[in-house]
Amino acid sequence: LSTIYIVFKSHKGVITMKEQMAYFTDVYCGWCYGFHHDLLTFLKDHPEIELSVIPSGLFAGSRVKPIGEFTQIPSINQSIQEIYQVDLSGQNRLFQEGAYRMNSDHPSAILALIKHHTKGSAVLKALGLMQEAFFKDGKPLDQIATYLPIIQNIGLADQIGKDDLAGALENPELAYEEYRKARALGVESYPTLAIAHNGSWYKLKGQDMKALQDNYHKIINLPLKSFGCIGC
Image (tube, rainbow, N blue to C red; front, side, top):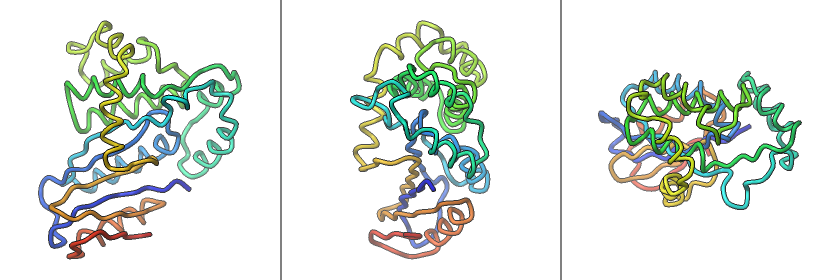
């Protein structure tokens, strides 16, 4: 199973409005794609949380290579499909063809561009639409055409045009700014959630929605003042 980490800061076990949550993810992360629906459910149950999506560069640098070289993809996708019941047929087709190169810089830069114009649920919606375009439909995430309907869907067609998308795809520095945020907290696996809450950090693990909810409530009701790990 995938491991979901949540880092919390606590303040006498009481949640205040609004709690700042960072979601460290990658558009090409299959576990993140599977987890997306659970995250939406979790956030619906917790309106006190304000989310920031941070793409983190799972396939960047030396890890950018033809998808066919990642021979573990079929077995991983089978596990993801069994747990989350998501459609991975598009990526599976690209794997069989073998040539497509997953480069996180491209979708990460587009997300960074979107974050310059909006935040919160709109960015999370854009993330989900990108992942669906790739994993379900097998669309390339290095092409402007893939992003045009997504920009339209989230209501930014008047703010982000083709030239803006082209500029983001050609400028990896936009993505690198996001990656540095993940590295600063030592985030190296995805999906990872982090909540800042007045002074103390807590690390939580949950492998399903019930564990996620249960451990979240344990955290916010414990007056812990130092580093702790709930659900480890």
